[in-house]
Amino acid sequence: MGAVDTIRGWFENLDSRFRGNDGRTSSGISVEAEYGLDPLATPTLEPSAPVPEPHVSGVGGQVSGPDTRHLAPSTSVVGAPGTPIFYGFVRDLGEYNPKLEGRGAFRIYEQMRRSDADVAAALAACKLPIRAADWQVIPGAGSNDPGYRRAVEVADFVRENLFGRLESPTLSGGWATQTFESVIENALLALDFGCAAHEDLWHVDAGAVRLRRLSARLPLTFYRFHVEPDGETLIALEQWGYRGDDFVNVRVPADKLTLFVVNREGANFYGRSLLRPAYQHWYVKAQLYRIDAISCERNGMGIPWIEQGPNASPADVKSAREWATKLSIHENLGLALPPGWQLHLEGVRGAVRDPAASIRHHSEMIARSVLAMFMSLGTSETGSRALGNVMTDFFYLSLEATARLIAETLSQTSIRRLVDFNFSDEWRVTSGKHKADLPHATNHLPLPYPRLVCSNIAVLNPLETLSVLKDVAAASVDILQPDDDTENYFRKKLGLPVKAARGGRTRYAPIQERVLISPSKEVARN
Image (cartoon, rainbow, N blue to C red; front, side, top):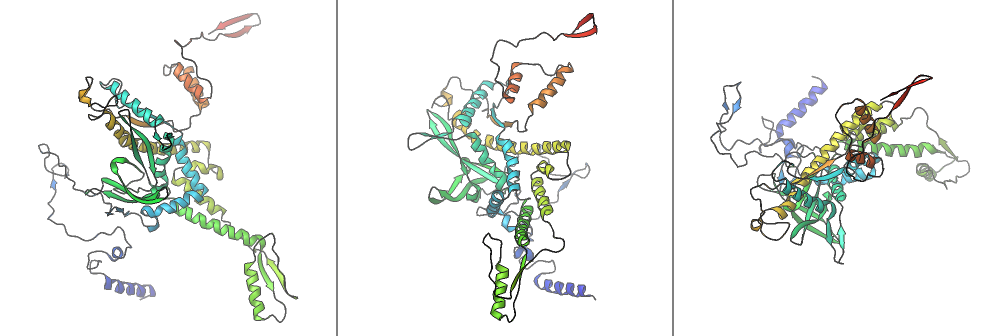
């Protein structure tokens, strides 16, 4: 028996003292789970009742339930979301690093985005195109639908509130205005931390209920998520944070809250930050920077060593050691030595590992973690314009998904509440009367909730687009007809003044070209 087999036998003997025959303790939980080492382990519990055998149909042995064609649908909750939430504290079973679980990860993400240029650039690449995009509120019904006029009325009201009337009265009698761009900027904090939120603050103005502010609630203040018995429906968000100079503990009810969550799995309201995959590379790169700084300081001056004079006492030897270890580069660096002593600076001999290549690798991995690989094309010997275009196209797809998540979340929360308060059966935007009392009420039509949409995320090169349009026109295909709206669009993109509206578009005669046939004859050709 070799040494390896002997050691393995020791561990198996020791392990059998703690485990039963099935590898678990008497409590039914694995030793790793009992000591907090295996978050994926689950208790070995017997079912509370016998589990019936599934019905197997005769088509391919498919497992199916009873015939539900004549049964009413069940409204009860049967399954489980799989996310442990103990008294509002959310556990992420898949997270193996305890430092990056829940709200404890916020401090690390805060340090990453504030201290590292690559992390800051990656986040800016994911945020700035969305912030600079066009955000619009579109009606909740098509132009051919019977309730289109009402849908336009609702959409105009929401558009006016979001894009121009997010304002709150102040104690001094003025108005504090909030821009919609700041709302998007706060929602994009979900990329940094995995989640972000704002609270709807309302104001009744001339019989209409409107949003006066979408007030940011920073992720650093999130404490507990209180849920209903189903384990996944949010009741309230509990915060610990400052309100001015007061440190308060409050619960924001879910019907006043808009919560943005990215990479959400199950009922994990913390989500997963875009910085989570980059943490390892950020951590290693930070250590490499520290090693490089120490190397530059020590190797730039050299390693000092002192040649002691004759009859050096033990105290002299100790002092010399302290001098040599404490010497560092400084503009006033100097050292006085006794007679017969000498100071030497030893340079580096042999090859020294340059950390620049490793630092560059981890910087590229940070950019790759957010699909911004094109940011690294100019830092290496490889890469081409065509490859950069492919990377950019894929990156913009991810930005469109993020923008759609924000738009749909706002449409289903703040915008929907705004419409319900003003256009439901209990409220009417034009007066304080019940809608049933109005002669033009259309109770038979569903309430057309408008939608927030985001467009023009990708950077459009107007010169390239004009070149494509020129080729399309030269091909004589009836795809795109010139009109004033199209022309004004490109005028805006090029920074030119917009053409004034008039009755119709001026049509010009085709250009006449003269082709020289001979010195004495010319032929006009269309």
